Amino acid sequence: MIAETKGDTRQRRLRHTALRVRDLEASLYFYSRLLGMNVTRRRDSIAHNHLAAYVAYGDEADHHALELVQDKDPPAEFVLGNLYWHINFSVPDLLPLCEKLKSEGFEFTQEPTPMSMDDRYHIAFVRDPDGYEVELTDFP
Image (cartoon, rainbow, N blue to C red; front, side, top):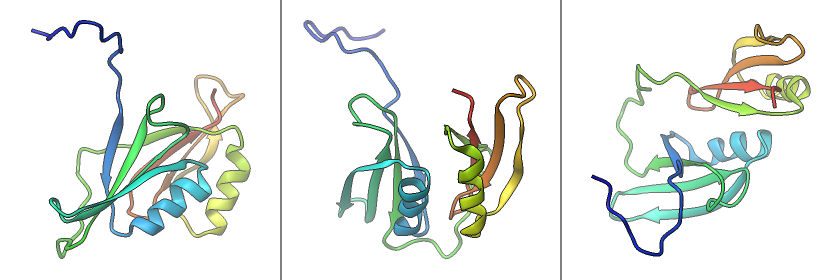
């Protein structure tokens, strides 16, 4: 059963997705400098022994954010989850962005190609600094 709160008219929404990262600064460079997201806040969690930064394309109150989390005492082996697939970003400058990412040394698992549903638009897959797959499309 869903609890009701009198006077609260907020809608349910997805606030953020958390990704564990090896190097917070490298991840911030990828998501903010290359993909154009804004760093909305940073925090040092003493209780959980990690550093975190949130990035979004606007204020967290209105836009879904990524929470990038770096453990202060990380495990010896960093293993990506075997059921994770990708995060999708719609970017109007997909082709020049892909060239920039290639020049920065990022690995593409799929080069930019026309989308099967509408070949006016393109799709590409690139790995972020931790190896997470990121889908880029210029589909609005």
